[in-house]
Image (cartoon, rainbow, N blue to C red; front, side):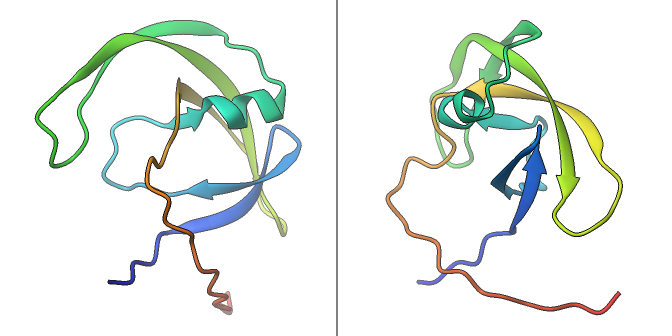
Length: 105
């Protein structure tokens, strides 16, 4: 089965990085690896209960929160967001196939 994820390249705190849009999530997350790559320190910590779709177990622990500036690759206004750090975003070994779609705006 093939799945197309909503992803894009953006500048996050000055570094070009791939972002995943999860419209069903109640929070914004950043992987520990990405936070390290961006060299952004946490601004606070927050106790979270994370329950993934289709799973019975709930993950409860304190997470670091990072303040990030996200800017589109080609023009546009940047936004500042807060993202909770998690160990990894996608635990599967699925390799994403890049599909380029051009939209005229």
